Length: 271
Ligand code: HPA
Image 1 (cartoon, protein in one colour):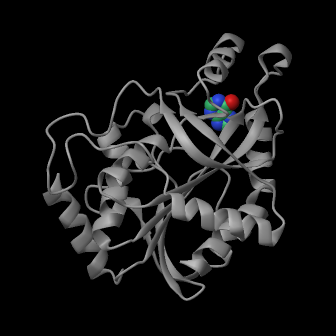
Image 2: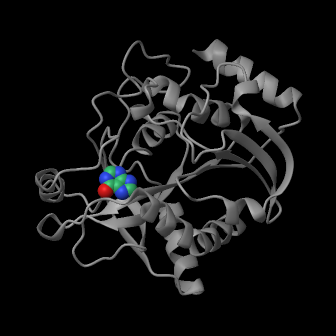
């Protein structure tokens, strides 16, 4: 795999993507407000990058953006890959390996997730403090390349404590309500049954979604500090469950764009 990563890196460098400091993965319904603040210098279709999987989900644009934000060089993935689309987890996480080899020092991730915490509401933002991997696979399964990371990576703190602390400071300064909790990754693409939400709550999760955990495992494998925030797009109370409305989920994610962009920009300024 390392040869493929190097070929992708070589191509991106040849296109002028040099020494990015921070990588950002823009999740479902998120991104435009953030991208508006990015002084874009390069805009590359995933399809043009050697060994990159191609984006399939309609909400996603499938491009790698490179540019300046708050005086920092940023490389942003507009569109990510999900396991439910049929990719292997090695494919889902390949771009994270490429970004790390391009030189990023931090990875910032956003996603949309269902809210299972009865004290919170849809529209809230949640800093991911820890996760549960219920995907039926692991991106590190198979022969381990020790040049990428260890065979048995520690998972006692996959989300960087310093980044969490800084982000909480930003939230306080900007007066943005930022929850903190546990994210559980499921395969999807269907949403959950009432019994499944009940189960996911009992095992300790506050939010449920179909992404992020593979990317975080791979980033952590490569000793890349990660911060992730979920936009809680729907309330998943098993005793009062409404039919899922994907358009509404996208709309709630859209409404969260502004505060989320403020948080990400505030953090980037501090890095
Ligand atoms: N379940 C899984 N993924 C999701 C949900 C949900 O309720 N909401 C947004 N992404």
